[in-house]
Amino acid sequence: MRHLLSTDELSREKAIEILDSASQISRLNQDTTRKFPTLQGKTVVTLFFEDSTRTRISFELAAKRLSADVINFSSGGSAVSKGENLKDTAQTLEALGADALIVRHSASGASYNLAHNGWTSASIVNAGDGTNQHPTQALLDALSLRQGFEIKDGEGLDGKKILIVGDILHSRVARSNLSLLPTLGAEVDAVGPGSFSPGCKYANLDEALETKPDAVMMLRVQKERMNQPLIPSDKEYSRFWGLTEQRVKQVPNSLILHPGPMNRGLEISSYAAESENSLVLSQVKNGLAIRMAVLSMILGSKNEA
Amino acid sequence: MKTVLSESDIARTIRRMAHEILERNSGPFLLLGIPTRGVSLARALAEAIDSISPDVCEVGQIDVGLFRDDRDTRKAKPIAETVIPGSVDGTTIILVDDVLFSGRTIRAALDALSSFGRPAMVQLAVLIDRGHRELPIRADYVGKNLPTSLSEKVSVKTMEDDSEDSVVIE
Image 1 (spheres, each protein chain N blue to C red):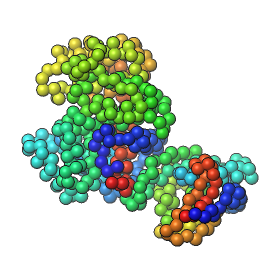
Image 2 (image 1 turned 90 degrees about the vertical axis):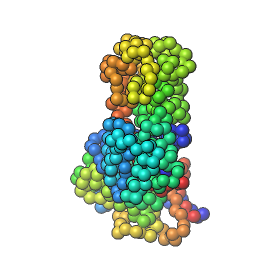
Image 3 (image 1 turned 45 degrees about the horizontal axis):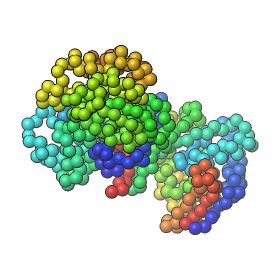
Image 4 (image 1 turned 180 degrees about the horizontal axis):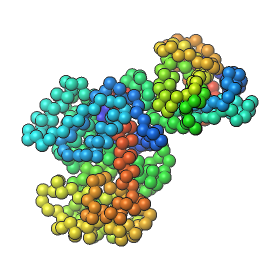
């Protein structure tokens, strides 16, 4: 594996290999925090053209735990036209000897461009590109689900029903999961109001929950990606599609996921976020292990291609 | 392809190594197998030791993938499980692997061990020593010394992983 750009390109075997490695890494870190010499002498750059706290911190920590040198680059709202900016930046970092670029960009396909048009020979990890993909998020969701369902290492999520709720249209988290989870054998349904999830066959979350999903993945309402109002009001969204206390009680055995940051009271209630079925904090914890596994596979081994 | 050790050869070798280990270690010790084949060998050794002198050894495993220094030149295996019963601090540890070759796996295992603590002593048991060391590392217990050329391939098969016990050279 040379780059990680999209969950589309992951075979079932490869995906399970990443999950297994990550779960071993998280076991190694259970009793005490450990630092591994795996990426000694490698330089990893987090190249973030879009705001992010948890993803950047998680990647930075993952690279540091593997002893890589980490440089944080954030665009800080620069107004240079996107294409040129990305190319120049990539070439500058290449000249400085970056071995991997972890890229977040508001343009869908930015990571693909960096990986495939010869601007840089560094490995590219997509940390979110526009409304397209966020592969490590889907991998950490899959790992959290596998743990939540108490499924052994080496196996997928076969036969589990996962309901993804919210802004499917703008969500790279949804898109990444919609390709990864079925690869792992899960049945996935994506629902939301018509403006978010065109063609959705349910009028509200109550109807969708009647299918008794094994897990419910709530998506954040991303106001920054809506260039026109797509929901009438926060209150109305919450009333029809929010995971309220009452709805959690409707599906007492379903696991609850949210990629964060949460809009409490909008798409998810505090009751849901803190319920015993909530995997929100294990998602954050698994994020670190997944990113360590991905970085060690991309940089810490001879590449096949 | 030539069979170097058969199933009964391996069983006899393991018993002999168990005696050698007990001769040198009177107190309790911990056998740590290195995945993949080292793990089943460590279990076989522990069983043999148990049948001679019960309750002196425990058995675990330690993965070295994240500690290798040659990851750039070889295809990485997925990370395997590490299980260390009890504490490493002050314990006598015997690392167990199938084939001792360049010595780089053992170097990585020593690094991995030190991330868990400070053992009182570390010894090394291998089923096959095929030579060609790249580091100043030697085994304390050797099942069989097998002079090889660099182009040859030595593979150890175990019941647990390959449903047969044998050592072949290709």
